[in-house]
Amino acid sequence: MKKRISGLLCLLLVCLAGCGTGDPPPALEAGVWQLTTLQSAKQEGQIVAHGPGASGVPDTSVELQLTCEAAEGVLTFSDETNDRTCTGSYRLIESGPQSNIYEITVEDTEGMAVVSRTTGPDKRAPATLVVQLGDRAGYFALSETRVPDN
Image (cartoon, rainbow, N blue to C red; front, side, top):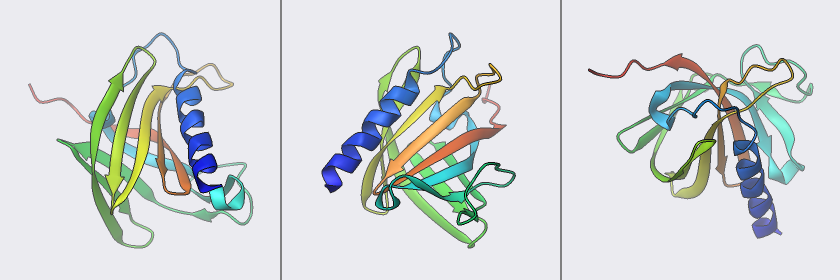
């Protein structure tokens, strides 16, 4: 059952990666990613946490100030709500015109991350990061762009 849920989450990541526009996706290292929603496979995909300003989330969902940053192979999740930081590693495994796919490991848990542009109902196509770790899937939006060094 656990393998089936993980497989379904990975399939979801790949499907979401194909919902972009003609604009190339940014890299994981593009800046600071802010949590929009966090879902749990153990709770049938229910949203268990959400970022600041989220709308349409269940009353049982808790607000979580969670960000993700990546640089030089190091992935850092900062949870300001609970004053906790987790680090891990990432490796680009596939890059294409619609998405960048990464293998990630955070605190001995392996997972996947996909960066793509997802077209919403308003026809905008913001950069989206989907992270699948264990039984959780987090959806992030690029909130602060990193200026490349010249």
